[in-house]
Length: 475
Image (cartoon, rainbow, N blue to C red; front, side, top):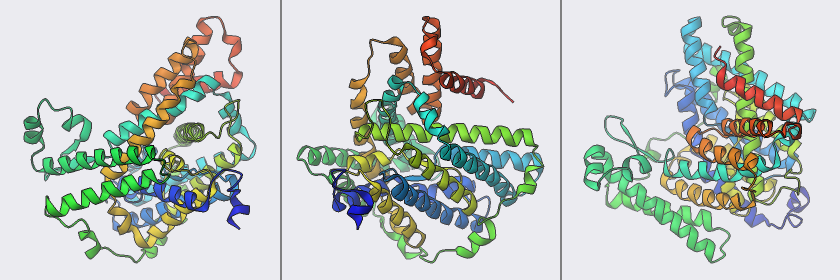
């Protein structure tokens, strides 16, 4: 049955490999399950019922999107509420509270209408192949540079934002900036105070996991990534128990395994406040819809192209089979998210970890989707995976994706400069879409200046202009 559904032999994979790949991806992106409701509710400002609603929506909408990816596109890419765009959503909610005087829940429900409109727009664009045409408008050389740029971003996340340690005053410290960036170890200890022992344990865990993955992969073990993460997790749990004298599983004692569906029904489920849109004006609404669309469209395109490139799924023209269906899955996820109560659903760059574990078909996405859905009941289990263990996988996969720089013609400045811009912009900005936009603008301007403007397609010009407007036109 699974063979017929997902064409496993044709894609050179097995049920075991796909399930391991799905579990690997789940472990690297499970952080979004609790982090997304924190961000969208401004860490509880909207009240516990809203937090519970967003939590359930995160699990359900992610699962719906992944099931669509599995059965429509048969690709191993996994989806969830996008980081970055969820922060933008929260900012819009806060601004709407200030402008219209709405309470947090009403403002949240109003902005959710914008996400719903965005999802419908994406559904139409996907059905009529317009999003696929936009993918093709990205020059091949620039397209090939997306994978290594994502690799740089993954490493930046692994060494940076994925692991942060907070002290008793809620000051946050990061591995690369505050630990390795300190002048001396004594200075790092002095600045971090009570957070220093946890930082030491996190750094050790990260590198133990990374080196374990490298060694296991060298020995040809396909489950190297997930085994390395498991080894790293055990190191961290032991460190918590024997060194920090804390119980790594203490949260289980007070955790609830009963889903708060009542809170979801009261705050987020089909709670689209279209009346609230009138309070901010239709011009602002249209501007916000366009902004959400641009960010999500190129985040998704970049992740799909970059991860597919690493998995060897691109043809000679740099195009991925079933791209339309993959983009359609993303649109379905966004509509599902807006109706259940979460921000834009997009393809996660952490999908690369599952691809590296051998995932090649929709069975990987199906596995991850089932695990996300199970977190409606089993969320506390996902919460015990240490961030340092997931960082091991992110750094390793990032290194592998950077290897594809060898496919790029750096003798051609019209390609080399946009790719170099993306390599820097993606990890620093934290946005795949914005980095691609900068790459497209650079490519177009260079082609014009060297007298080869006719080689640039009309759609490439249009996309470049749209990004210029987004970056520089303050409304």
